[in-house]
Length: 423
Image (tube, rainbow, N blue to C red; front, side, top):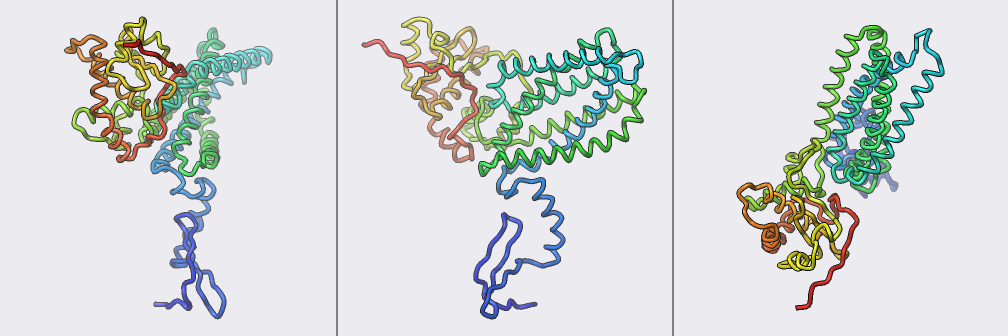
C-alpha cells in the first residue's frame, strides 16, 4: 500500500461527488484527488453529463424526488414529441399541403383562426383557473397532458372531416392553449418544490436542456416514422394510441413520484382524518401516495376559503352563533351544503391550517348520512374538537417533516374584521 508523502493540511470537495486533499510536501503544498485515479477517469463522462443536464450541486440542491420525476417526465416528453409529429403531419395535410387545389389564402386563414382562438382560450383559462394551479399542481399537470393528447387526436382526425376541419383544429387549438397555461404554470410550481437552495432558475434551465435533448431524439425518430405513416391512416392511429398510452402512463408515474412537504387541501385532509381516527401522523411520503391526482367534479360538500362575511352569516344572530365557542381569527359556517370559511385580517399561517382542518371535519360530517345535528351545532362541536386536538396535531406534523411555515391552500382574498354584541 502506497504511503502518503506528506501531512494532510486540508480537504475540499465539490458538491457530493469530488473530494481533494492538500498535502505538505517538500516545503510546498500538493493537491491530490481523494480516491483511486482509475475511478476518477471513469467518472469524467458522467461528471460532464451531470454538469450539462443536472442542476449545480445535484443531488443536495434538489428535492429527493427530483430524479424519479425527471425520469418519467423525460419519458412522457419523448412520447408526446412523437405523437405531436403525427398530429402536425395531419394538420399540414388538412390545410392543403400536397394538394394542388388548395390555396395559400385558405390555409393561412385556417391557421390564423386556430392561433386566434387559442390565444383567447389561454387568456380565459388563466383568468378562471390561474389561482388553482399552485394548490392543485399535480392534478392540473396530469389534466394538461390528457387534454394535450385529446387535442392531438382531434388534429389527426380533422383531415378526414373536411367540412368541419376549421372547427376541429380551432377547438384543438383552444385545448392546446389551455395545456400551455396549465403545463407551464404547474411546472413552475413543481420547480419551486424541487429547489432546495432557491435555485429555481438553474433547475428550470436544466429542465429546458433535458427537454431539448428529448425533442432532438424525438425528431430523429420522427424522420424514420414519417415515411412509414404517410398515406397510411391505420398505422398512424395505431402508433398514436401506442404513444398516447405510454405518454399517459409516464405522466401518471411522474406526478405520483412527487412528494410535497407543504399542505394543500387534499394532503391536509388526508393527514387530519388519519390523525382523528388513530392519532397517527402520516409522513409527507405516505400522504402524497394517497393524494388523488385526477380532478374531482361535483364534490358533495365543497369547501370555500376566504369568502365574504355574508357567505357565512346572514344576520346578527348568525354572527353571534358563529362566534360562539370560537376564539380564533376566522368564522366558519355552512351555506347551501358548502363549508365556508371567513378569514380575519390578523390570521396567521397556523390559523389558516386550523381553519381548513376544521372545515375538512365539517365537510366529512355533512357527508355522513347518520348525522342529525344542526349546522351550527356541528360548527360549535368542531371548535371544541380543534381546541382539544389541533395543538398536538400541529406539533406532530412538524416533527413528521411537514413545512408549516407556508401552505398551498387555495384562499381567496376577502379578509374581514368583525365585532361582537356587547353582553
